[in-house]
Image 1 (spheres, helix red, strand yellow):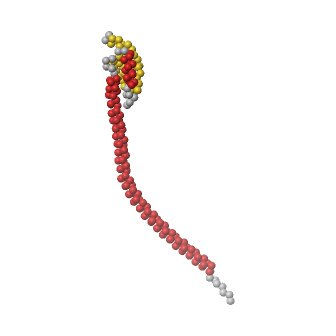
Image 2: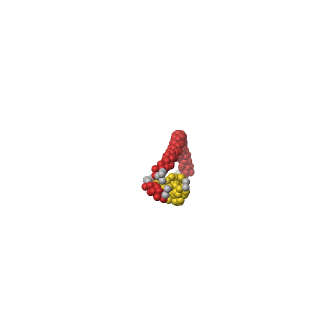
Image 3: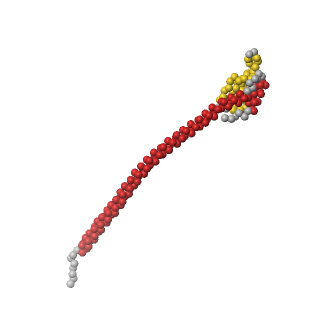
Length: 181
């Protein structure tokens, strides 16, 4: 005899397969949620740790910022002091310069043959005006100036006859160049 199985085997197998797939899906989702939870928890711990470290580094940076500000202030003060020292040195040199120029000119000037009326100094240029007995005295004076290591040259700007106390004398103007500071 032939037996016929009237049970819906295919449908039952299909339901079991669907139920197993659904169960597998639920278990997979549950495992995925657990993994996501642990990764998120681990990331939140890392974020908290990094934020704590960031706060500590910012506090340390603030401490160093104060030191850097002091260093920058000291550098500015040092630069100001260097500038002041340079100005003082320049003033020291330039304050001695007129004395040195006058001493050198006084040493070169023959007091019994000529006298100076004015002396003007600007940078390395010196203008002298004076009165001499004659042209030879002026020429000798110019030679003395040229021979001096303090001056690099002397040029006669003008020479003219003038009367002083009923005496005919030579008025002159010289232009000198200073060779040493």
